[in-house]
Amino acid sequence: MTGPLQPTSYALPLVEVCITQLDLACVAETGAAFDGLLALRPQRVVVDLAGCRYIDAAAIGLLLDVHRRLTRMDGVLVVRNPNHRIQRILHHARLDQVLPIVTGASPAPRGGPAPQDESRPAEPTLIAFGRARVEPSGSSRP
Image (cartoon, rainbow, N blue to C red; front, side):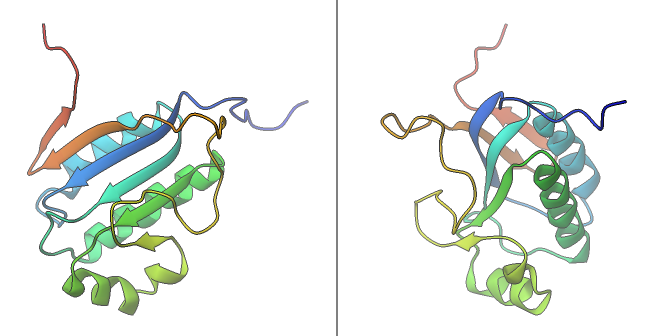
């Protein structure tokens, strides 16, 4: 009998998610969007919080859940560009000890899996989360 199925390859090497609101009011819808995203088996998910002004305990729980699920798939969750207020919240919740938090434009976290082909950087798949709105960038709509 074999153990649980482990992905042999990643469907997407990098997905960048831009979140403008992450609190109890939208955590269920954002969580559902993350469910769909994780079904694509990304190697690395970068959550950009540059446009987000506040997060709460529900948001921290969601980030921890996404981190845990990605870790089981040998993936990495990175939080990027939190404002000073959110950085303080993440620090007090000790999330900065659990997942990489980076500032600036670089999606490369401390540690974590490197892109498969170092000679060609991975093209990110961009997904924007606004209050219950999920919109993949560059996708063609019918």
